[in-house]
Amino acid sequence: SLSIGIVGLPNVGKSTLFNALTKNDALAANYPFATIEPNVGVVGVPDPRLDGLAKLFDSQKILPATMEFVDIAGIVKGASEGQGLGNKFLANIRETAAICQVIRVFDDPDVTHVDGDVAPSRDIETINTELILADLQTIERALPRLEKEARTKKDKDQLAVVDAVVAARELLDGGTTLFAGAADAGIDLALLRELHLLTAKPFLYVFNLDEDELTDDAVRARLRDLVHPAEAIFLDAKIEAELIELPDAEALELLQSLGQEESGLSQLVRVGFATLGLQTYLTAGPKEARAWTIRAGATAPEAAGVIHTDFQRGFIKAEIVSYDDLIAAGSMAAARTAGKVRIEGKDYVMRDGDVVEFRFNV
Ligand code: GDP
Image (tube, rainbow, N blue to C red):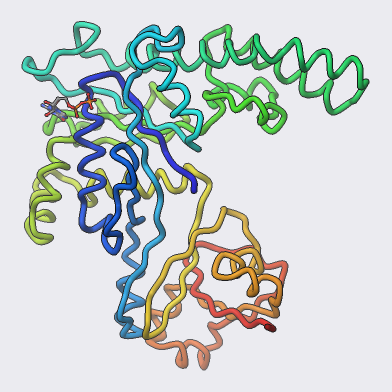
């Protein structure tokens, strides 16, 4: 399944964050084996709509969508040349679908910084540089073969790949990641897919701040600018670790006292899920209220196929009501009477918040 790799320099709060993610009852609920391997955790994607559905249908169980986080230790200056855990680091990160960089902003004289002092923009540079150097190595190794293939086959598609790789090399040489610069440079990332380049993956950033900086708009704006257009999440990993130990009501109180509406962990999972290009639709009944994972843009039959391949093969139609309409109506029957339940066919593109019943032939 698709996973997000958590990377960052040593002592920035990665483990604190990862442990909080995987020990979090709210997120890891229903998943007794949430930690597959020491560094891989499965978490539920928070979705309050599931509670709403469970109430309406008197469902016995709630099953959220899930996603994986991988704690990837070992990036330091020189990782691309094998420093630290260099090679292992690169192999691990290659397998993830997106990269989450944890950046230290918090000050703490008791926690040393590998490069002397706290400097978010420098740390972002350091990490990006290692990823960029790794990609340049990949390109240098692959390019002669790709060029030869293009020459001998005289294949237009293969020539386009070579052009894209050369353009990528230029961008990377200038210090820009493919994620940040490919679109502006007119590089089609699909042409680079076979190289599995690290900086072509979607990035997101977690800024680990001191408590008093959490709601400082000036600080947030400055940090956000550093990583634009990637998503930025602001949290205090120490507080997140405390929050998961508290009963719900007290956790909410602590959050509110910090001017937050949602925990950082919950934001991270939600934003991470979207960064992976994923979306959910919902089903509900007395047995369970459930969120199913689809890629954004999936059609109704593709969505049905996530439940069972037979549902996709035998797809006839989908009965769909939007979550808000269903809650407003108070029951499926009332929503139907109110004309809020739509019949959608095989070309329908699923929308966020669709509550669905499929009709199919077996
Ligand atoms: P990692 O090396 O990036 O995995 O960092 P750790 O999660 O092991 O954290 C390193 C040290 O920093 C530990 O002593 C943590 O308790 C501390 N730490 C982590 N997050 C914060 C934070 O938000 N504020 C402060 N003051 N300390 C933190």
